[in-house]
Length: 148
Image (cartoon, rainbow, N blue to C red; front, side, top):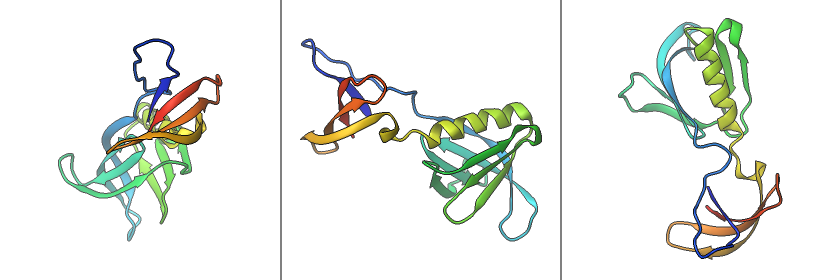
């Protein structure tokens, strides 16, 4: 989503507020669904979507949004648990530093909900690919136009 401050001059610039999209990728081990053995897979976190791949270049075996999902990590054990709609995913990383990076990224991604930052109002415009709504920042009260 993009937020435009209320027009105060003849030109306006769109800004992406509250951090940019979360991007992470790398190998981790996960417990198999059928057998409790660890399987090495390539994971991608793109925005709010977490996907699992057999290799870096293969298509995703599955993809889930992490918005509002429970994410729990034990950095000392290099383990993160993500609650998915149909199961709990346990991820195991090579070291504490990588685990902490993934835990921070997953927690940022799970909270990137527009409603966490803005009160969204009525539609004030629309086009072929998006709608524009009036809104206000929960932090500052600033009126903004939100392109969704």
